[in-house]
Length: 310
Image (cartoon, rainbow, N blue to C red; front, side, top):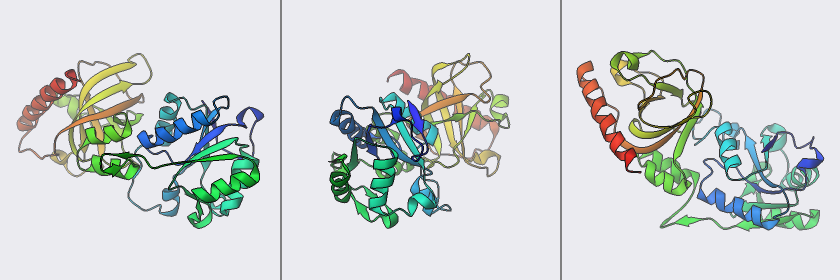
């Protein structure tokens, strides 16, 4: 997959794509439906995605609580896995935010990226003040010479599949419901960072990860699937993870600590991907280290049983 980050300097090989437009946070089933429409709209054209970094919501409200389901790198990795060939990851800045809806269609999509066809969701808004609608884009496309398909919102049972609904499921400790809307397990990806090595002292060495900038799932202990993405230990494993601030040792910055079953090796700096499968219990503060270790033993046994049955 080719990643393009400047619509004003495009190589000929990256023009003429059919692209779905949106933020694609989580790359959920609704997103996949839109991507499939783009794939089928012009099968002989490169399949592309037009998205933004930072997320427009981060640009307009930089002090708001973290809400993203995945980092830009994790999103790119997921999009590549579903067959996207061109990722137009455009910097969202003052210049882009100030474009009128027509100028966005003309200067960015038509003249800049040279798109052949675009697909957007029915709730798509764009341009200065989010004044442009999907119907407006369809009209602009007719004038400028590119096709536009409007994808209906996708529903599952009694709710629309959306990043917001997935965040709610994760906040309510329902990772399997989130996975049903995503079409895959919710994953947290990133490099293993240094910790205080308390887990090693307790007999449970953990791979620690930052969740900065991401929507925090419910704190507590999870059965997880762990993928080591690079290096000599590359592969898939089972494990148990703690999400939260580690109240046993004082208030700390939230992070994710994963104990990988039957694993020995150094993962510092190695990118890993942790899939949240089932929430086992909430975060607790124990009266003693012995009580904590006893609970960790029970958590591990329960997680092994859950993961073995997948």
